[in-house]
Length: 120
Figure 1 (cartoon, rainbow, N blue to C red):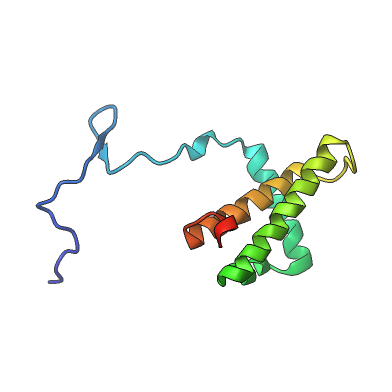
Figure 2: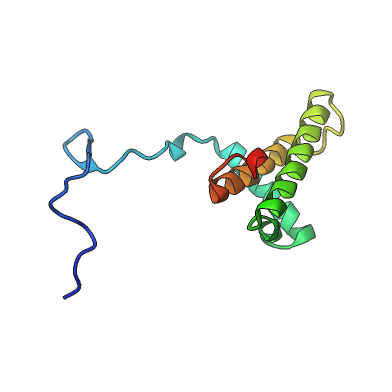
């Protein structure tokens, strides 16, 4: 029989839920995210996929120098969408979806490299 990878003599710090159930930790409140924001970000990812291909943006995330250049461009696009939205430029464009896309991919890169994108 394979040996357990868990050391059962060490008790983790548990969080007790109402009713007595326990968990190792409380996860972020994903249920609190408004579906409208998630939908607009998903639509932006889908829009990009029709032009560039599914998950093509990932090609520039592994190498640190490439990831920094990618994040810099995503940040610049995000900033341009913010300025256009605040000045009512091209109101038919989903600027919030584009901003959400940029925030999502920059957060992905920061998690992947375990540092702010500006330090890559």
